[in-house]
Amino acid sequence: MRRCIGCYESKPQSTLMRLTYDGSAFIADTDGRNEGRGIYLCRNRECIEKSFKRKAWNRICRSRADNEEIMRAIDAALNEN
Ligand SMILES: [Zn+2]
Image (cartoon, rainbow, N blue to C red):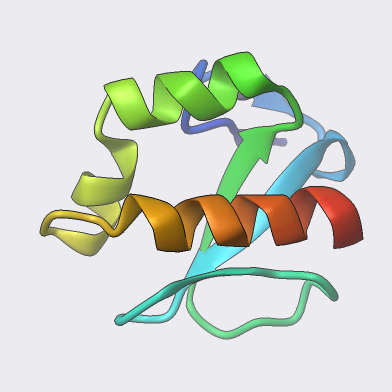
């Protein structure tokens, strides 16, 4: 079980999209093998919006996250995970 960074609910990993933060960038973990910290998110717009409202991304990278980069990573994760 993994916790979504939007709604904070724990769900089976297979139902969530997975991204990673490698220390400099957020990227879609399309094959589940990326190095770095795993980030899990439900596959719906509501949780994506919640994750931004809660500044979850800023906390992960400990600075102001690049929202465009994150949205690109989310799109890639939605399409390819
Ligand atoms: Zn969620």
